[in-house]
Image (cartoon, rainbow, N blue to C red; front, side, top):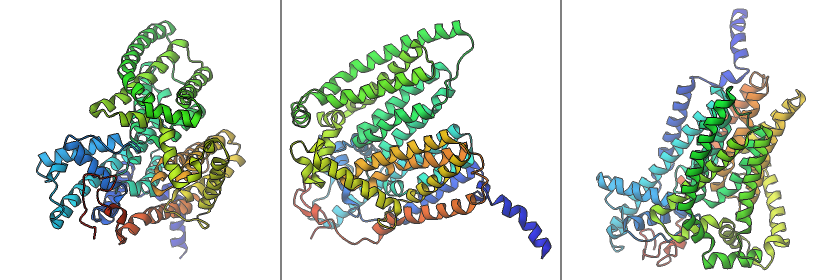
Length: 541
């Protein structure tokens, strides 16, 4: 007996820390996460009837049918431009390969042939779900590799990847056709790239800033609500970023810097000139000007200018903090403008002013949906008055209730991770790691602020993906930066419990949809407003 106990002591000590959570190394762990993620997709999701998640599956597939029929886009709420564009191209590719018989509206069987109509919609929706799975897998892999590069610790990066993959938001987004998935993937890839930028030389820093700016703009092109997480990125970068790497040869740095400034300025001027018509079409459409005037008392794009100023001020603050010279600062600003211009130019692939209006006037479009949830927000002066204040106070109480999980449960396992972050912050504070506590608190506060805006529409499950990465980043940042957390005796049991809870709670919504039997009767209205060219669906009485 004593021999057995003595042999177990090293194993128990090893399992007291983070090491006990791993069976395989980096590649094996990442592969296992993706395999398990894909297996759960086919077990709970792929075989759902095409109408099981009609919001937004049905009208995204419908828009792809319109796209391949050469017809204009009719859905501009998010505006969902990239989702529709890529889905149409995906259908076209599958059709050319003989894997999808119906890929355009004119090919749909007559509604009188119920079986054929149901089969066409089912095959198209399953194809769309496979594309969503592909987006999710790429997001998971990109998040893993960028985070490993940032943290320089594959084990912590793996835990973060696990938390993202099986989070409630991503688990559902991989099974349906929604616009948040691409937007979140682009936005958080941009954030991680910008956090990595200071480690590169000056030339690559400018290139990476431009690339990240383009990704952030593409996120906006697909889901305008992503503007709220994006607005939190500048202060996060200011607080988290390392001092940029410098070259020793000052004269060589100046010469190369001038050429870099010239190149980035040329790229910015060219991109902005090409994007100006899109910007003008979005900002000065008569309907957009009228709506801005009713909300703000002026047709001038006030908050759009404020957003640009917000980014510029943080860029200036960053340059001052790290003693960046005028040449490098101007190069970075030019790269930002070039990336944003290139991102907007994607709208020209299949231009429709509706997309430009939604992207350039996000608050107005989002307010329309908030009014649908709370009619008082549509009253004159409500946006800056009592109704908005009451809605935000109610939202704050809702967030606090959700944080307890008991008072208001949800399929969001990152709530439990947030509890762990609070405990880690206390641990870090007691060990004098005040800066790390502040950094983690900023991430949690940013996530809470974005979630608070989301409560204006009930903070639906689909919105979790917009802020879950911030909570995950807070947790892993503390794990890496605070000595003692990775080897603490509670790290293994708490980590193991969190992993089990993450999968169980994150899978709750897909399982619920699998056994759901209700039919979306609202789509049974003849020529439903989201699918006006469709007279009738096969599932309707």
